[in-house]
Image (cartoon, rainbow, N blue to C red):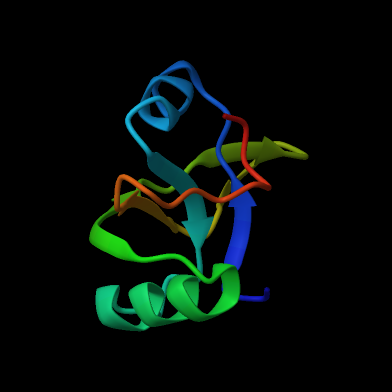
Amino acid sequence: MDKSKNQMITDKSIRLLQQNQYTSHVDSKLTKTEMKKWIEQFFNVRVSGINTSRVANDKKKRNKLNVNCKSRKKMIARLRADHFIPLFLN
């Protein structure tokens, strides 16, 4: 489970759960086909589509220095109507 960093819990992601779409941060080096194969094998579900986007860098102030944090990749996976992931909220 090292490819999926964490599940995103936001207002939008909770609305997407009702449409059978699951949102999480993933490893930034993964491609859509690699993510699809990994989700289908790990959770034993059928994925109908994946949308990805990169989340911009955050600038944080630490000890009066501006530090750039690494960018992250966000994934939204659409599952077929008869499949679901039980680990996520439904």
